[in-house]
Image (tube, rainbow, N blue to C red; front, side, top):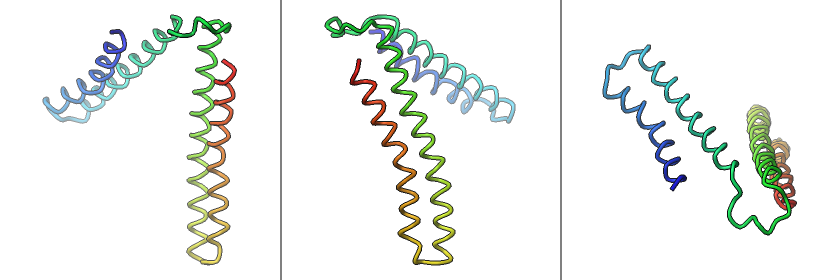
Length: 139
C-alpha cells in the first residue's frame, strides 16, 4: 500500500510540473520555476521514501542477528560504493576513450593499447560491485 503511494507521488512529481508547463505559457522564467518545482518534489519524494523504508524492519529479517540500523547502513554503503564507482568509471572511460580516439586518428596501430586503457577504466565499476557484494554478504 505504502509503496504504491510512493510510486504515485514519484510519478506525479515528474509528470505534474511538466504538464503544467506544457499546458500554460512557455516562457523562460516559467520553465525555470517549473524545473525547480520538479527537482524539489522529486528529491523530496525520494528522501521521504528512503527515510520511510529504513525506519522499519523488513519482512524476513527476523532470523538475522544484525540490528536494522546496521542493515540500513550496510545497504546505504553498498549503494554509495556502487554509485560512486560507476561515476568514477564514467569519468575515467570518457577521458580514456577520447584520448584513445585521438591517438587512433594519428596511428591506427594504437587501437589495442587504447582498448586496454578503456578496459582498465571499466574495471573500477567491477571493483565497486565486488565490494558492495561483500558488504551485502555480511548482512
